[in-house]
Image (cartoon, rainbow, N blue to C red; front, side):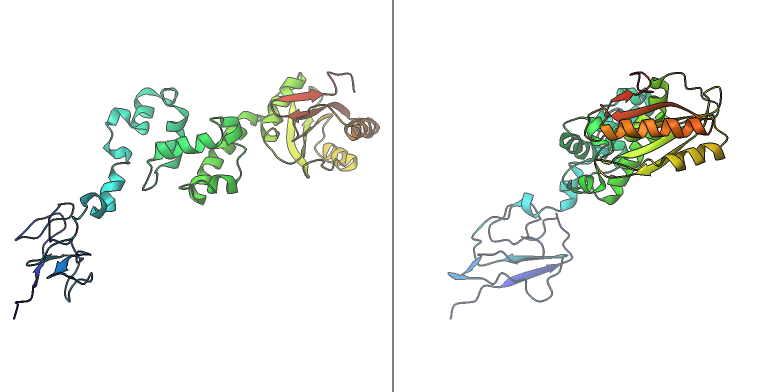
Length: 312
């Protein structure tokens, strides 16, 4: 009777270690299975051996076929741990002077590219991409335009593989802080022109996909008392209630006011309704000893001023 081939199980051999005829993970060896598995296609006197590890084989067990032959060679790259794959993409392996955070500290923010600054906000990447590679993919989605990127919604950010809700909210929060810094109004800021008024509110409106109306309340010297959002509407219109606007102005003891709303379409020119609303507001303000100083329409990076164009 022909002696049957035998499986030899060697306990306690760690992944990546060769011992007593057992091939380590990632090592090519004929007739040898990778850690924790039997070699698929290994033959036993012409018959195919089972592809299931014998009883007692664990993650720390090496299984080898002694008297048989292996039909294939174990691919070390495919069998390698995903930890090794991930390390190839990590920024931690870079030289310190190349890491975004370290360069930010040593050379300043201006030395970093948009992708590197975005990578700092992201903090980490994925198994396939490091933070900078992920940041570059995000920028590609916006055609490398920060103006377009800051218009992205939560759903648009989250649709990018590797950008979950947490990363998306971090990016959106950074953009929102930037807008608020641009429009921060200190007490007593004086509005002397339409450009001054646009600077106070326009950054809050130019990226919106819906219409909003804001009001700046002024004292007799045209210094800012307060700024408020009056209403938020749809893509084509928003409500501007003359009575409520005048009432709020009187409550704040204001002497003048500036109305600002946006056109998401990008067309800065006023429509017939915009002109009618401006006339109604001007008359209502005059009755209450108030002055409608201006009405601005923000459209992207431009605006229309009724005052500058002789509409008030």
